Image (cartoon, rainbow, N blue to C red; front, side, top):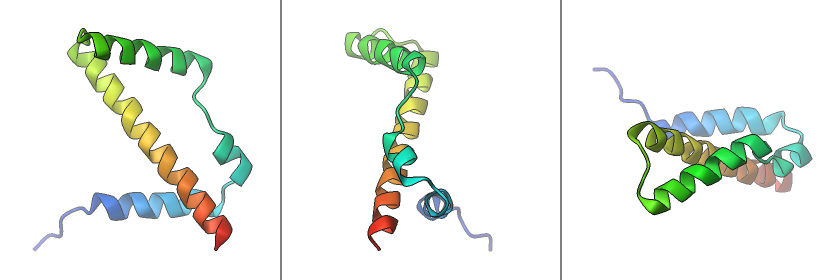
Length: 83
């Protein structure tokens, strides 16, 4: 029987890998580029207005997944720093 993918475990492994060799200050200071932030702001505004296309909805979902991953990485870096 084939085991199912545990997405949480996969993310944990990736976060550990990235956090172990990370420059703590660089990770904690990470922000989107101004161009990417501008695009995100546009998508968020369109989302509030209810005017997102299907493609823009997928793009916003990608931003949200990326932001979540970055937050997890920052938390993991801080956790490892305190350990």
